[in-house]
Image 1 (tube, rainbow, N blue to C red):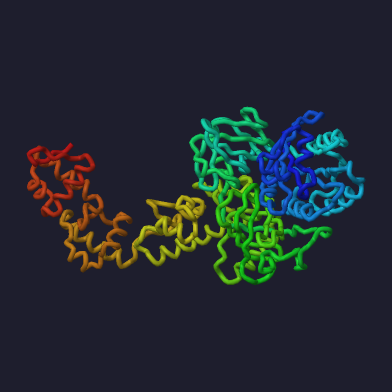
Image 2: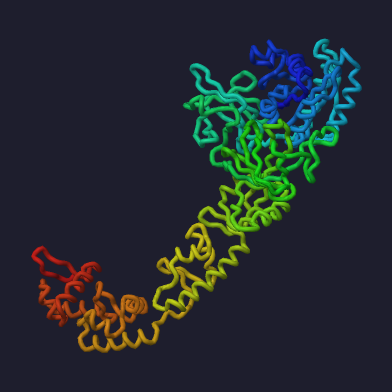
Length: 610
């Protein structure tokens, strides 16, 4: 299937032409038929003689219903532009063309209607002149009469050639279905309709409903009025959602493949003028064709940010505009939207009902602009971006990025880059931060000789890594991690001279009575505080039996040897006497041996060796 939107001035015969081509009534509401004009979106379809099926999104032409028109053309890849032979180019013809140009629509066909009322050549040539200056360029034209049927066969043939020239959709792409209608059917529940521009839908699929992030399940699918499973792009599709209240779905909502799009309220964009030389009705502002707000705020000026409406897909969301560069700006949206780099959209001024600019999304996760001069720096960076998602370029700009976010931006994961804990790291950034960490660890060791290296969390914070597991990527050949601390590989971890001298003195005393652990007062006299004692234990110069109990290395093995000479079982008092020590030391020694599985305390309180 192929989907084409109509466009053109009010009452130029768009709906009549669709009715003549399809035999279906595109105007859904009685009020539309009574007034003879399309108010909301209409839908109809037909099979062309050449074989393909074409579905039409019939949009309103009246100026008051331009938002409805924009919802119709937003997701559609091609347009059937309609101009009446007896009226020619009209104001809404120009406005619709501005919208198509702003959205970058490049595929279309001109139909000159009412050719039975007036020679259509003048209207045709005038319309083609206007269209040629837009992104549509030079497109084919067919003169028809919906009343008499003249030219319809030629139109059908031209439509066949148009759809044959359309680029093939990516049926394996992530789904982003912009809803243009949402309603409830008794016994079925909530139904959402839209144009599936890419991807494939199956009954039973789990999708994400945005905004809100609610997970929903596809209960049923219809395309062209009949059940279908699967539905592949491009297609008009109705999606019956299981367990979704009607108020959760509305025009502008989107059904998404879960976890594949970033919902953003802040985005940086490139602006392009929507007005064309032949249709311009705006003032002259350098780089643009008109003001961006009712207050005549220039996109390139330095006044307060303007508020306009961003139209993308079928969504229409108020957006505050902050100019950055000559043709770039930051938009802050009233609600989050699922956008990707390269998306096309347009800005509409609700006061003047004009479309001052089209936009190309450059960044959906832009940096915060806090410092003085940050906006100018960002503008220079944006000037080099072309709106095409590039994984390598995005990683280079950001330094670090989550893999799932990079893919959700629309970019491919770069091959062969360092990664860990779900993050990708730009190699130059990794090298710079690795050098920073080597210097910091060496400085930490010099300033804290008694500490066992730098804690991992300190290393993470110092290098600006978002996850402590990424510190492993910075170690290289010069650093290592031992017991949760970062050390310089091969660095001397000996004791300072004053500590070594104090420990030596203590070891001399212990040589006389190996189990006479020094009291706290004696340790203080020697200058051995908690840090010095911990360093001595790590260096293997002392053995910690328990808090406050320090002996010479090997004292545990010596104690086991002495205790083996005691009768089995033996009491704690007998152990104390064999070790020539106090109860303060004997108790933790016996507990240490028990923890190591070398001794056991019996129910009567005596001990035995194992």
